[in-house]
Amino acid sequence: MKSVQLQTSIVEPPKKSFFQRLWKNRTLLLMCMPAVIFFAIFAYLPMPGLYLAFVNYDYSLGIFDSAFVGFDNFRFLIMTGDLWRLTFNTVAYNLAFIVLGNFLQIGVAIMLNELRSKWFKKVSQTIMFLPHFISAVLVGLLAYNILSYDYGTLNSFLKSMGLDPVQTYSNPAIWPYIIVITFLWQSTGYGSIVYFAAIMGLDKSILEAAEIDGANAFQRIRYIIIPWLKPTFIILLLFSLGGVLRGNFGLFYNLVGANNTMLYASTDIIETYVFRTLMTNFNFSLGSAVSLYQSVFGFIIVITANWIVKKVSPDNSLF
Image (tube, rainbow, N blue to C red; front, side, top):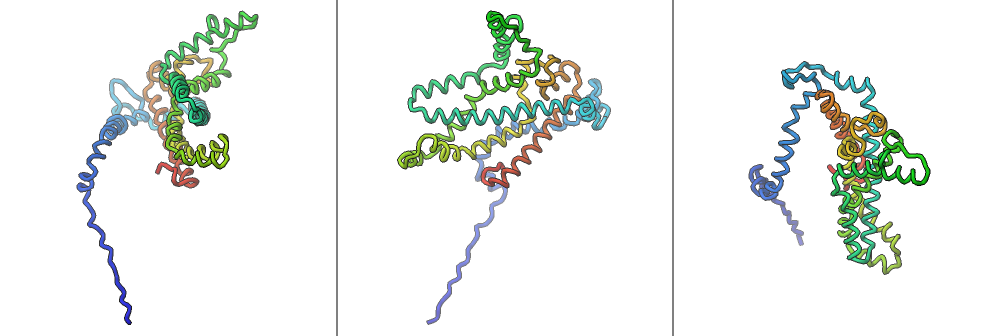
């Protein structure tokens, strides 16, 4: 008998043109249009204004007719030492916010998940969310009422105990702790929503099976919940690193102010410096140079961090 070999050929469907693909995905594209228009107007159209960082801006001449000075604005920042101080303060604060904030948010989300009383869980969530919706102006006012040398609650208590009052607004060493604690108090509850939502997406049968096999609460958290939260943590970390050189201006300005020279060493960040150059010295070129440096530095950090994540865990990288 002769064996007959059947050869089947796979016929590939004809490729659709660019306009055909656009028409097929028109619903998704329409949903994306608001975001595309937003970034086109507020992120891409203003980009020619970056030229301001390389000129000595003259109000009467405009941006493109002002005298071109090259990198003189950047050189001035480096020579005065402001750039290194601003970079260190901004990065140090943001790393503290990111690391401590994410770990606290994960802890809060896990604790909320372990609560059995639905009523108590909802009340706890509401109480923890409230600080996020308090204006930075009110936060600064509350801090001043507590820390003020003459009328603050803290010094009033110390005086009643026969102790010397503390000059908080002239002591730069204690402000990193105050700023970090205030930020964590204001953001932890709200930031835990993402992690709590991720836990809610976990298949409950896995936890039930682990409980039947004898795993206690700590073992379920360690071997099931925390590994489940790993992709979410990495994505949020990469997003946060993109803004590691962008400080929380509202928090710093309302807690410390932008003109308290005694606290510059530990509280001055890029945003407060740019604010002073624009509103006090009216040096738009110098402020633009700092902002450009800020954006380029953040872009490099995101690309580097994503490259490292892609090498370690390819499935969790952004691109």
